[in-house]
Image (tube, rainbow, N blue to C red; front, top):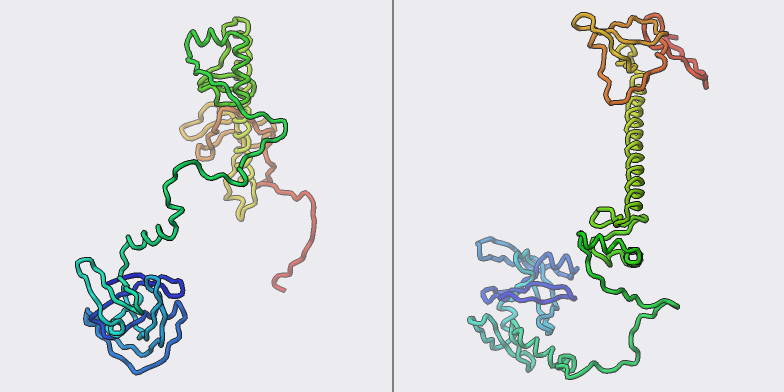
Length: 349
């Protein structure tokens, strides 16, 4: 029979076994609770699966609680699996007559003049709790008793309680458009949306613009409608121009980053890949070469193999004003801007 108990307010699992001759305590519980043990004569133990073990320590006068009753007994320390404590015949013999009910899976015994039922029925616990707090569990027969202080939420000075009038949801049809054409109704609608943005379902007042389900509300006035549409298209054109400027800036930035990578110092500058431009492609020369429209100041031949060219990406073309300086052998000419420090290194003595 397995029941729950506690040791120093720590929950443990207890196995009551009538086939066990001694009481045993798990080695893990001993280590976790720091229980004092003493060495004793070795006791060979045989478990159900045939495993042979030996118990060499004992815990004298071990205390534990079970169903609000405190017990004490000597425990042999053993490595247990599936439970924390085993109560055998050594403990059952101290209880006197014990009645077992295998149908209801419980046992009862008398200890110190009190009848104990293990495990205790749940109804007994509930009845004990109801009897202890009888006034709390009584059925209410009226209003709660008056208290010395009633809880309330104080308002800020000169602030009125919120009071929103209910409005019906407008539908997007001719009747709705006709109703919204009235200036007083529009002003009232906007005022309600400023106070409570969800007062009119579908309508939104944002940055001075009234919309209904994403559509602009302009009313029936022809003059106002034309002005609003013209202003809307002006803003739309400005947004389109701004997007084009941002796209050109991204392309220029991307090109500048590639140029910096090409001009960066490498271990062998002759083998480094370098691209300059873009330059317009003129007529094709042969099958694998093209002629480029280079700058007037360029001192190189304008015909290049296709393997030395790279396609320009993007719609905007930003021409390179000058070519980087090179020396006679064609390598990039690099000159320092200023000398910050000098150092002499001796090699080979």
